[in-house]
Amino acid sequence: MALNDDIMAKFYITTPIYYVNDKPHIGHAYTTIAADVLARYHRLIGDEVLFLTGTDEHGSKIAESAKKAEMTPQEFCDQTSAKFSLAWDELDISNDDFIRTTEQRHITGVKNILNKLKESGAIYEGEYKGLYCVGCERFLTEKELIDGKCPIHKTEPQQISEKNYFFNLKKFLPRLEKMIDQNEIKILPDNRRKEVLGLFKQGMDDFSVSRESVKWGIPLPFDENQVAYVWVDALSNYLTALDYSEGSEKLKKFWPADLHLMAKDILKFHALYWPAMLMALGEELPKTIFAHGFFMIDGEKMSKSLGNFIDPHDLVAEFGSDAVRYLLLSQFPFGVDGDVKLGNFAIQYNSDLANGIGNLTSRVLAMVEKYFNGVVPAEDGGLSGEVGDIWSDYQKAMAEFRVDLAIEAIRKLISIADGYVDVNKPWELAKSDQEKLAKVIYNLLEVLRHLALMLYPVMPECSQKILSALGKSDFTSLTIEELKKWGGLVAGSSVAKSEQLFPRLVKAE
Image 1: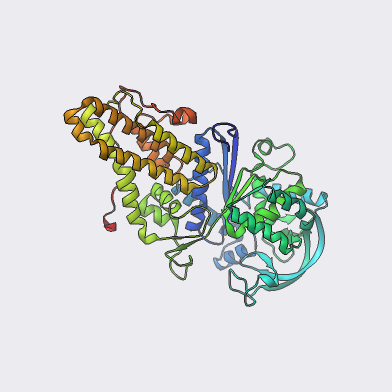
Image 2: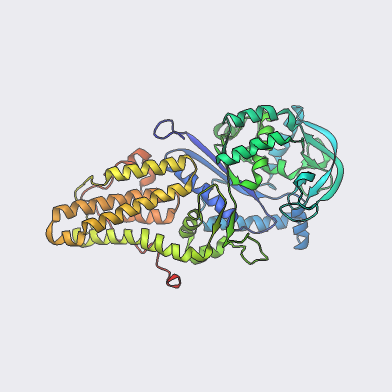
C-alpha cells in the first residue's frame, strides 16, 4: 500500500487453514489476530477487504484422530472446526469467510485445479519411494532427519513406496527464483526471503500431489484410486474460496492475494510449492508472503505435556477479547521468534490498559464533565502536529505489516497525552485560566478521538466505546483522510462519560 496515493481498491488477506487434529491454541490465535488487525485497518482506510481463514480437514492424521475419538472423520472435523469458529468469535475476529476443506465448494475447486494442472502438463505419473512423516503429512529427505528422526515430531518416518502423481516443480524453479530475488513476489521479513532463496541453491525435487494409501481426502478427478496430497488440497483453499472457475467474478475481483500470513514452519509450501502451482495454472502470484516467528511460553516450547498448551478461550475468560488481542501482539517484534510471558499478562494489563488507555479516557471525559458540563469547548490545534506525526508512524507500520510497531505508535500517543496533562495541570487552570483550560481540554478530547481510531484495528470494542462516548459512532462512514484531519470534534457537541474500559486486576498487584 502506498501512503496517501495509490490506495488499493481491494485487500485480500489470508491466514493458513488450521489443521483440525486438535483444538485451537494461542499460536493459531496469534496469526489470526494479526490478520484481523490488518484486515480492520484496510477497511478503515477504505479498501474492500476479503479476510479468509478456515480449517484443513483431510489426511491420515485426521482419520487416526477420528478413530481414537470413536467418530467418523467427518464428525470429528465438524466438531473440531466448530471450536475454531467459536474461538475466533470470542476473539472478535472479523473474517469475511471461513472455508473448510470438506465443503463441496472446496472439493469442486480442488478438482478443477487438479484437472487444469494435469491438462497443462505440470502433473505426471510416477512411483515414490521415500521417508514419510505422518505428523508433518509430508515426505522428508535423509538430510532433514536428526538422528534418523523427524526434527519436529522426533519420530522415525515411515518408508513408503507407492504409485503417485507428481508436480513438475523443477520446471518452474528458475522463473520463481528470479521473481523472489527481484521482489516481484515479496517474502517478509527479509531474513525469510533469504531463507527461501537458500532453498534454491540446495536443489529441490518434484513433489507428490497424491497419495494412494490415504483414503480420507479428495479423490483425483482423473484417478479415483488416489486422493489429493494434503498440502495440494490445503493450499488450494486460497483459490477455492473465490469459487475457482473460468467465469468466477469473485476470482477476478480479489485474486491475487495481497497477503498470505502464516508462521515460518510452512513457509516452504507457500513460497515455493504454491507459487509454482499458480504458474502452472496461469494465475498471478500472491503479492506478499509474511512468515512470522515461533513463540515460547514462559521460556518453554508450547506442549500439552508441559501444561502450557493455552486455549484462547481461557485467556478471553480472564482478560477479555480486546486485552488478549493487545497482550499477544505486543510481546515482541512481529516476525521474529519470541517469548510470551503469561505470568506478566496481568501486570501489563494493569500498566498498559487499566492505567494507560483506561485511565486516560476516564480522566479526560471526567474533566469535560466537571469543567464544561460535558460540552466540547472551542477548537484548538495545540497537539495537531504531534498527532499527525504519530499517524505517519502508525500507517507506515501497518503498510509494512508490523502490527507491533503500530501498537508502539499508539503507546506514544498515550504518552504524549499523559505528558500534556502533567505539564498543563487542568485542575490548576480551572482556578486561574479558563481560556487556556478550554484549549487543553479540546486538545485532550481530540487526541482521545485519534487514539480510538488507531485502536480500532487492535481493540475494536474499546475503540467503539470511546468513540461512542465522544459522539463519533459513525466513524466508519468517513474516509481515512477525514478521520485523520484534526478538529473532528465540533465545539458545542456533547460527550458522555465512558464505562470503565479496563478494570484493574487486583491479583497483579
